[in-house]
Image 1 (cartoon, rainbow, N blue to C red):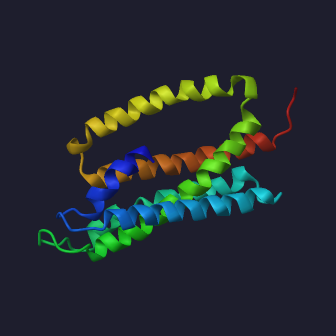
Image 2 (cartoon, rainbow, N blue to C red; image 1 turned 90 degrees about the vertical axis):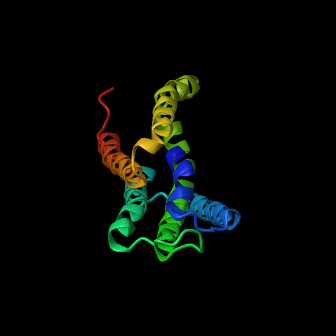
Length: 181
């Protein structure tokens, strides 16, 4: 998510197209709100479990962040500087809105899983411990953002989200096993 925040603008306007930043940001927030609303409905039910539907959310997120790579290969880039948002930009915007909806599902769902798996007395310490490498990683990526093409950056994010779906599946398998203690 942190990397996406810095990459969506250059992805949608590679030739300095005039894009409506305010409208796009508002659309992202609407998509996130809709995702959050969907998460509350999913969590209100006993089935499916959070661990189950989060696998799907991570896969959808991964695919949606692959759109800049796919459109880069399938849609010819515009040679004109400026102008309006391109067709490829519109497709990417649709994918980015899907990603934001998945982010909206992610936050309430991850909070529920944290409350299930991390004891309350140690939760803040454990979460802050994991924020250190996350912030270091984000700083390294942002420092080197010009060293890699934007497609490589989105590809890395997509791969990480796919790995997250695999790990989510593993968590579900572990949580289904009866405890020996």
